[in-house]
Length: 277
Image 1 (cartoon, one colour):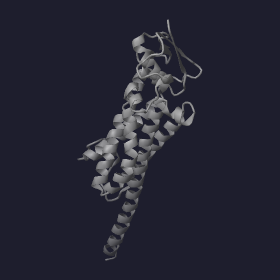
Image 2 (cartoon, one colour):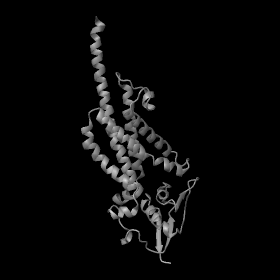
Image 3 (tube, helix red, strand yellow):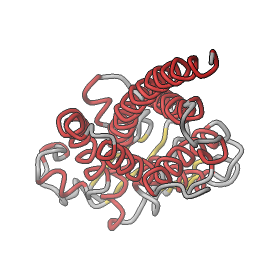
């Protein structure tokens, strides 16, 4: 008799505990969403050189890493919270492997997105021990990870009846993030045309300042981030021992690439001099 009277109390306590855990999971998910978008946005601003133009400071790589760490930390808290739900069916294995025991598609997206971000973070700490060009290509999968994690967030909001929050706050964060990500891959000529990039020294886009170009790199400033290679693979190359090699006098068809790399270098280590032969 005593046991039967305690059952409703235990059920009520369990439901109250689960409600608190779900609120924690919800809050950590929203913080992870915001930090993730901020990480991508700040990474684009650094890679394109716009961060230095806005702040007057070189590099600012630490800010990008701090934002990324916070995004991953809140994402991990969000995932771990589900293992604490007493009336749920989430196990550690189910939160690590997508589609295990009938896992939902939206859950699989979140798992994959978080695991790719964790892999990028681990390799980032080992980038001097990894063939740099391969690491750079893998780092670029962060765009894919962010995309599928955003889709996971929206599907989760729909399933939990919180879509109205994301329509207002989520879109407010997502729109500038998507805009910057798109701008990251647009040619400099297009960015100049739409006003996101200034033409160099008053010249019209696509017009060089001379018939020959001299390229030099300040090795004291250069941190081997690999941005120059991403912008101008025909001019700059990071080789296996993490040394930077480059064409000091590139041909005319590579002038635009070299200028783009100089603009994008987060440490402002690339100097370009154009002259008439």
